[in-house]
Image (tube, rainbow, N blue to C red; front, side, top):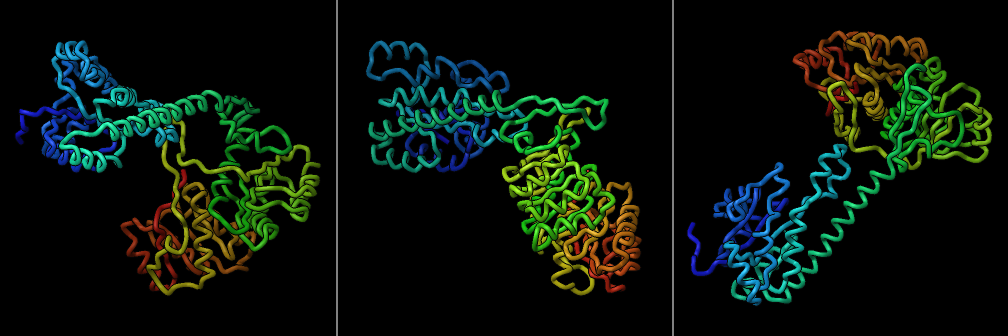
Length: 503
């Protein structure tokens, strides 16, 4: 590609968002602009077929500190800030022996989009230093230099250049300069607010002890999310309380209808949905009353006086609900050690973090919506709508039960769960033993597994117990054998859209 050498107009381009860069360069090239750039922007411009002069060639100074310092150099800022009609400025600029930059196109690192990232170092790296400096310098010298800070203004820039024979007019330059200082003010405000939030809201709070009495523990608590702000009454909140409430709330968040989740040792031991929260609680407790003793009860509705009377007859460690009627509070507060928590303002995080001896590991939370689209019939005939609802219900619960997880349910009530076993058959046998002990075959049930059944043995067991439908993820080399067995025995088999492991 050949540039005209009689007219030398330079555009400095350094953009994080490289959308529409081809359109920009193509049109500027037609206006005889030469390009100056840095790092990834330079590579992109060249990949599009245009020549590009590296900033380091002008400054004779290579990028340093992993790209933290690229454009911060007197030669670059001299080109941006010198007054074109000032004789002294012209003489000083001539000594720099650098191109005269008439157009600056910069969009800043998207700091605001990274502030929810759990890795603070990544947030810090999104604080743009060179970008704001470039556009502020160009904006200050708007009488001679045009500054573009938004992709949305590329079209307006080209229109103005076409209108003015390859140059921009003063009205346009002044309008773009005003944008510069508005953008940098907002940008710096966002950074300031983030620093203040990090400094003010995080607080270390000592807990009674850790998982065991001999272990010390504490929580680094954001005052906007602190569980201590949600507490209404009862004894001090412990390490185990926090872990259990966290697990229970995540499970409860799967449900919109009145639902109760009872947690024991970080796992659901009883879950039920119903038309009323009182009935949901009774069904959840009935699911496994022995395990529920001393557990954590979470409800996604207000606790009424009627429900409080029922709860107060049993021993629980903690009750969490969206709200409490005054009469209900009066009843429950009589149990001095019973912790009461109001969860109406609690929201799920977007990331999960776990500490290991190798460092902290992060993952985004599973946001899959478990509904009818989550299930795919692969064997036998479709079951009734109520059984489909139970498969959906069991899948929602299985998502929050430690692997290997088996959830047996009927009428939106867990009847038996196999939790955390090292093989799936043992989990299934435990779930069935709880079902037969607590319900004595009184209910037609469905079964969901959080992972695939590697062999037909689990289906064979379920078939003997007259299971009405089975849900499992696909992925086993023996999927076809499970499908064949289910078809042969007329056992409805559904494949789940995704695996539901929780370790």
